[in-house]
Image: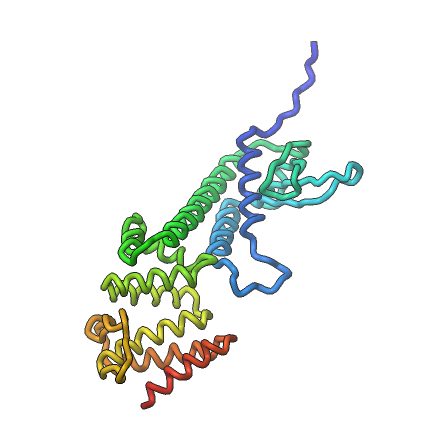
Length: 289
């Protein structure tokens, strides 16, 4: 009779949770070596930071390393889970197409110590899953915005979301944030919902303070209210911006003038594009006249 104790191994659920967390980390981790590109995805970075904070709060770290084996030269992904820096689990996958979030095959399990950390790992997995679903929701909303045919369709899409403010914030932080913000902003103006358009562009600027084009758009918004108050020049057609008035914004002429000036100056300071600097400068000059 074989009375040797069978070696314990982690459950399939535990292994899949580690894989999922690692895949999320590999996809959304900000670069440590390359300069941050202008079109970086702040939402992805923010969610990555939230996940790491969750893991830290649980006393866990989920680590990984991709590389070839010493002898077989196969591409492998090695995982390690630590609890307060003590290793609780190590295992390795063979990567069939060489990417972290692609097909893989379990090839070995190293150290494994069962314990309460596995329940905390599930908490981290649940948070990771929640963040992944939110990112999918944003992508789906962006696809629907791109397919919308009228401003009213765009407005209705945002109105249909349970957490309207949360979705707006995420759309203003995603990789397509400039397009999203402008589409929502102009659609709300065209749908005669000016105060909400004001809130949308304010939110976009607040979340992206270094975006020169957003500052230019914000300046033009206040400039339109000023122009509607003092009258547009001969032959000028304000288009939908005729709906932007001081009364609807509930601000004074001097306040709007000050805000327009602030955002034009900020656009000029931040911009590396000549056309933005020239437009902001030209608009700023009209405020002095």
